[in-house]
Each structure stands twice: as C-alpha cells, then as structure tokens.
Image (tube, rainbow, N blue to C red):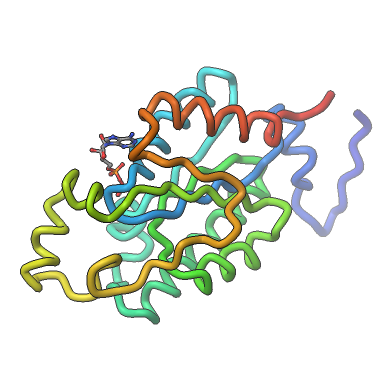
Length: 198
Ligand code: ADP
C-alpha cells in the first residue's frame, strides 16, 4: 500500500487499521447491573485476543474509579459519564482499536448520545438482557440488597429507570443462554464487522 501522509494531520485511521489488521468498532453493551455485561465482555475480549485482535475493554468500575471518579449517579452525572466514555471510545477507534464497552447506560437518550458521538457506523449496540428478578438473585456485588434497603439512591431498575433498547443490533438473553453461548453468538455477530478485507 502506498502511503500518503499529511504534514498537518496525524496518521489516518485506515493506516492504523491496516497495521493492526482489523476494522475498529465499538461494541456497546447495555443492560441492568448483574445482567452479565462484564462477564461476557471479559470472555469475548479473550476470544478476540486469541484470534489476533487488539481490543480495549472499557468497564463501569474501571472508568468510575479513574477518569470519571468525580461523577455520581444523578441524571446529569450519568450523562457526563457516558459522554466521556463515548469520547474515549472514539479515540480508541480512531487509533484502529476495537473497544468493548460494558456500561448500564440506562436510557434511550444516553445511548443515542453515545451513538451520535461515536458515529452510527462504528457503534454496535448489544442488549444484555435478563429480568431484574434474575439480576437481583445474582446480586454479584450486593448492590440490589443495599438498594432495596434504600442505602443506594437512584439505583437502575429500582429507583432509577432503565429503558429497554427499542432497536439493538444484537440481544443476548443471559437468563436463557450460558456465558459460552452468549460469547459464541457475540463472536458470530462481531467477527465479520471487525475483520479487515485484504
Ligand atoms: P454486569 O457487568 O452486567 O453488572 P456481571 O457480569 O458483573 O454483570 O455479573 C453477572 C453475574 O451473573 C456474574 O456473576 C455471572 O457469573 C453471573 N451469570 C450467571 N449466568 C450468566 C449468564 N448466562 N451470562 C452472564 N452472566 C451470568
């Protein structure tokens, strides 16, 4: 491939994608706390790594203890949380890196903002779906128990809304599928989209 570089611009995304032998996309996983976003994200990242892809996994806890450690869970802060994550994802995508984002991202408005910022061609929405009763039984971090006792205000699904995504690119029903089945399904959906055609 012949290289055309501008003195005034960084090396373009397509060159970086060529270097990494992949097409960059954001796989945006939305769902209730405990629905399985992180579990599936972690397993999917490893499967993609084994196949030669460079992936950045962005996860709620990681981001909220780092770049967004000044934000809480009010409507405004949730919006700002997602705005920053979308901007960070865009930086990765422009560097040719695939990102897997695991965030509750509870409302249609918030997800539309993320899609807008990242660009619709690079944004793939995956709804990690499980009824709240199941998520509550799993209660990985004991958050539902605390929320029921009123110790966590504005907890998604209990005292703060979660909009069911009306038109996701993929739905993984984790109350009906094993982790392995979900990962397999995500791979079948995602691999053709991030594979660079020679
Ligand atoms: P989230 O990131 O959506 O808050 P986590 O991945 O942290 O959710 O937690 C989901 C929990 O549910 C994990 O403890 C996981 O082992 C468990 N789990 C049980 N069955 C499934 C399934 N089929 N898919 C995903 N997670 C499952």
